[in-house]
Image (cartoon, rainbow, N blue to C red; front, side, top):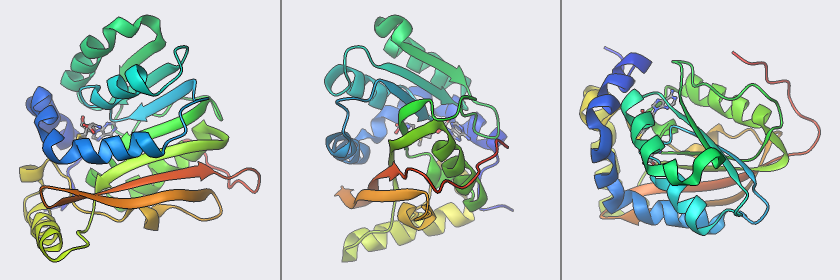
Length: 229
Ligand SMILES: C[S@@+](CC[C@H](N)C(=O)[O-])C[C@H]1O[C@@H](n2cnc3c(N)ncnc32)[C@H](O)[C@@H]1O
């Protein structure tokens, strides 16, 4: 049995989970707030989010951080999540576009089209090869100097948070469906230094559950070729 959920298993899980995702705020909210605080949103008028869930982070950024003329594009594998996000973000009108992602994490086609690419609590449910593919697509979609903002479950730095993350990782390895496929990962290890300059990387722990908060800039020049899958 695979230790990672397939795209169809993840879709089924999150279609059923739906708005209960927002109840994870007890440990996610502090990390999402830390990410928002470390992003430079002043000139981010073109934003893309992979795996937007119910649109909670999008709403937070559009309400309090992004310029009033910012456009926010987002996708999610789950049709239920797409519906919830469209409803939640409806008041932003045509500044927001949400679509259902295909199994291979649908990024927009245009290269260098975005100032900011985001993904929170999504990379931690992907297999390592898929994380690398997502990061390559993020690099292709960002303009040079554009920002990548990520949050994921990670390994706990303290005794008790370390125990919690080890227990979580063990459950995820045995029964990934019990934890929505999510497991503790170290995001910084996936970022290739030739492509990304990490400008913030911290661990935020809430209720003993640790999250990694990472902001990186897409380097200018010396770009590797990142073909679409
Ligand atoms: C743990 S939830 C996090 C949702 C939201 N980003 C948040 O922070 O609350 C993971 C989300 O990623 C979505 N997802 C999983 N795999 C995906 C993929 N390959 N492409 C796009 N979305 C995906 C799921 O449907 C789900 O909504």
